[in-house]
Amino acid sequence: MDTLLPNTDAVNQTTFTPNAQDATSVTVNNGSRFQVGDLVRPGNASEIMQVTAIATNTLTVVRRYGGTPASNLSNGLKLTIVGNAALEGADAPASRFTTRYRKQNFTQIFAASVEVSGSMRAARVFGASDELDFQKQERMRELLRDLENTVINGTAPSTGQQGSASVRRSMNGIVRQVSTNQFVPGQNGFPSGGGAGTDLNDVVLNAALRSVWEQSAGRIDTIVCGGMQKRRINQLISSSRAYAPEDTKVRDLVSVYESDFGVCKVIVSRWVPADTVLFLDSSRIEVMPLRGRSFAYQPLGAAGDRSAGLVVGEYTLEFRNENAHGLVRGLSTT
Image (tube, rainbow, N blue to C red; front, side, top):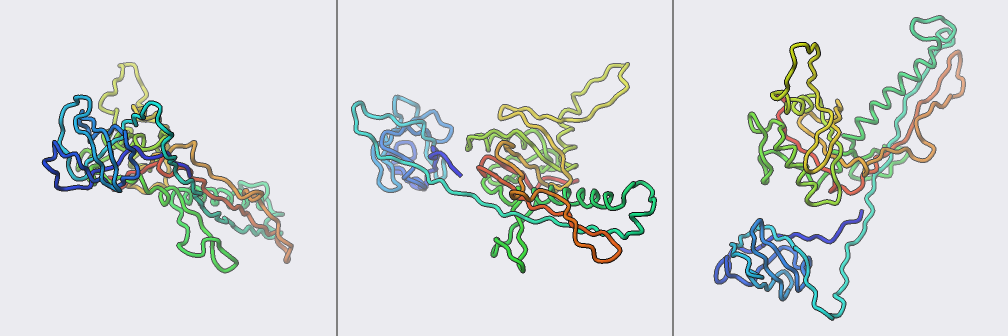
């Protein structure tokens, strides 16, 4: 995983000298994110401050740089680095970089046995020309269902993830891997929904899309939810629908949600938790088999008057740039 150098931080100070409007010494959470010459904007104010010195996590700044209007600093206030003003003819600044690290997941084996007697294969059964082929198809459908569920809700063990002949190996799904952008309506500054306060509405949808957009280089293009939340999304335009007298068809469906922060295909899945909506950048997600281990049928040796085999596949979820995705949980399910 590769990330850009952060350009935001927060004030970590409760008392300002001489006051919050004139203080020129500001303590922040991460002084290493700043450079001398940085132009910094506090919160949503119009003021710009210029950093002139850095001592660990304490910044010395020029307030109201360039004649910008005054503002008040406060503990926890977000600071945004607008950019750095380098000196003409100056030496190259000290190099800064982020460390790439490899995110990993684990493969999971999906398997189901098939066994049909010789008599069943010879008999003419209703709805199937070959009972063995019919059972293969049924087991394959079940395994594909389980794979979809695991891609969303799967969890790897906390220890022994590599697995063995005695330890089962499982993979982490999407819900398990999203950590940076987890939102709950009405908590930590995230807006409440409509109705009882946790109903999904356009305020919640746009807040989640905006939050991911602001702090990642990605753009959400897929919304995945269960049946209840899909109906909530459909209702966003129900009140504005109009029909002509000759219309004989009623359509109550939203398949694409377009906002300032992305054009999103809306997909319904029965496996997404009922109180959750997933916001995904599909270009950074891939479900893939271990090489040579996609779903296939393997005949087993004959052991009497029956045909037996194994439908098996080994898959994992490749989930890149965790902070380019998000989820909202705690939504109303009634």
